[in-house]
Length: 308
Image (cartoon, rainbow, N blue to C red; front, side, top):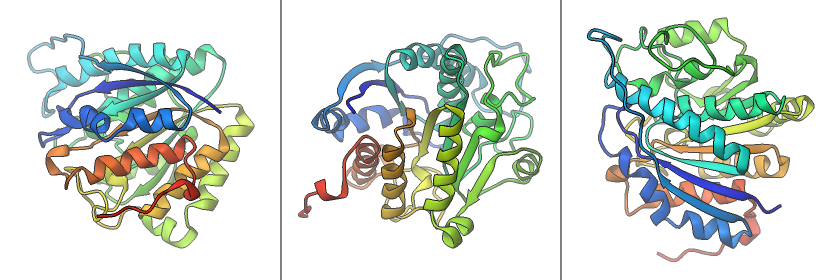
């Protein structure tokens, strides 16, 4: 099925501690994202890179966090853009660090609510990103987006209100393998489906993902996929500032994307935490583009032999 793919770049790196993610959107473009999508028969519109809304906080607001004004500005701008583009087509948000999901998911959730549909989120990441600004020990706000778009406490009065919070029971996390104590407590209190790498080692990726997709289909829901580079094993995807050993393999990641494609349920996508400054001849960017191709229809039999 041909999609109307709308590319939106969000060169945000203030949520992370290491510089370089602001180059991510253009690295995805350089790796041929548009060409790959068009070769699969999709229509592609690239709306370029957006900028954050200007924000000024009172002195002493959100102590212990790094660049809170920037994250709030990005969240506000991205939520409005995500609401608009998700109503018009299949948005692909190019990051930038994972703090951008606070805006992308909350904006897509508004579109889902307007259509009378529940939004489901597949979170492919080494981290659950369930901190609030008050529980993060690092102060890095790429660790808070799930808590924000789920409508959890700790964000008011400074962040934009979440008008269509995502039900935690509609969130599935896969690949988790680095969890702080405060996040562990929250995971114990919430109905999020969490499949850490041990669970995936024992169960594989097929059964957990199939069960989640069956729930999305039964509810008539929209499905947002948020793919962080650190979901992947750093041996195949080194271009990320938060590497955690033991991530998903090449074939596990492609199988997930192929199953998502077969389901026909995915309505929006984040590609985040690509830091080209840390990459090796662009191979992480190329892998992320290839995974996007699998999500949007590229088959195993379509893959040519590569010569190096």
